Length: 77
Image 1 (cartoon, rainbow, N blue to C red):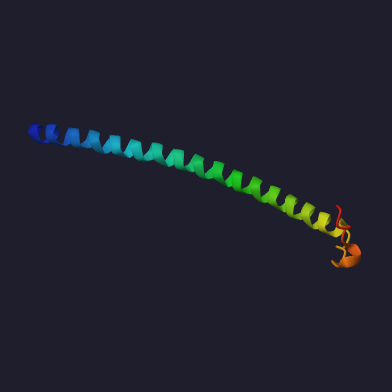
Image 2 (spheres, rainbow, N blue to C red; image 1 turned 90 degrees about the horizontal axis):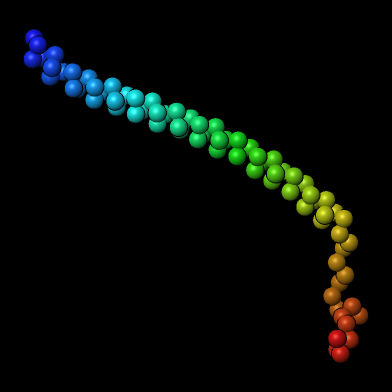
């Protein structure tokens, strides 16, 4: 029975180490997901703001003049 305990003890340490490694990886992944979520939310808010400002600029611009000989500059320009 002693030989059996000695044989399983290194396996248990290996399993414990693997479990700890998995816990560490999970913690890092959880943090990364939270950070990326915050970044996506920030960019979403910024995109909404830029789209609103673009709509306002388009509405504030005068209508383009129709092209034709009466609106073209003289040839010497």
